[in-house]
Image (cartoon, rainbow, N blue to C red; front, side, top):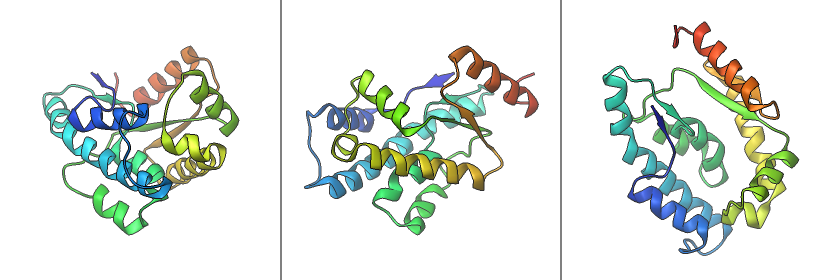
Length: 174
């Protein structure tokens, strides 16, 4: 079972911020802070549903996980202690395996621009912001044995094969 992010009411508000329909905060730092809290609220909103599926024996794939994404994104506006306090809450299920698709910053910016994504922080800070995010994702991966970094510039069929192989090695798939 797969879950895209931002499907609940909090997520809808996040999408409205990204589309420019709603503005939060009074500047780039306060906008980042408000978005950080909204992202955590969105994760709290969907976590019971995810836990229910896991309890039923259903494998769940998420495009983002509160713990990993929080580490990368919320570091812009929160201290490490604040992030760890939120991430260690009991309601956040620790993923069995996390895949990070690593791409050079220039490629990431090209992809963001191609899909027409809106994010007030990307628009204000661009490459410096994406560079900081990439560095934090790479650092997070280096600190955790359950994180696999894949070359996100590889063709999708190769990435799927690599994910499948890693899941078999970890006995997530048989």
